[in-house]
Amino acid sequence: MIARIAGLSLVSLVTACAAPSATVSPPAARSGARPGLEAQVARLPDDLAGFRRGPVTDFEARNPGYGHGVEYTAANRAAVANVALYDRGRAGVPSDPSDPALRAELDRAVRDATAQPARSTGRALAETGRRILPAPGGPGLACADLTGNFGRTPIDRLVCVGGAQGRFIQVLVTMPDRRPALADASAFAAAAAGAARGV
Image (cartoon, rainbow, N blue to C red):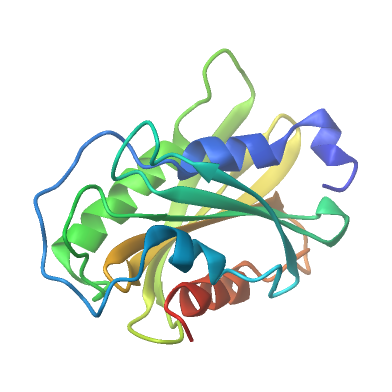
């Protein structure tokens, strides 16, 4: 990231936030045919809305239902992002962003994203609003906008959750707060959902 945000590793912070928490919900109605997890992760392209694909983290091996997370970075590390695909042990996941299961998942993702990292100070994020972000291949994503600081650096973070062919897709995009924005977080989230849905 620009000047590596005064030495902070946003990639590691985003990756930590991307893993779903331990609660496993009961099965929900399936939304479309569900591909294999690896096949769905493989749909995420090397270049996505100005971001470059990085490593894949396998949360599924140790924690079934946690899925995989894929890291992305924008040019010059101006922004970092993570796309997580998981099911929490459900046979299917709803795709309507107003569904209670997706609203609960967004609540959980926001709590995780705003939690103070252990053994650190000077990092704080707070939610400033929610919206539905249109996305290709199905209903929109339920998103929350967060702002705050990592040390002295003002930060923006977008957190989105939706359904992608029977799995949750969670997208986090984090960048320094600049005007104009250093990257288009909404375009990335929408493109990630479309790719995961096979569009």
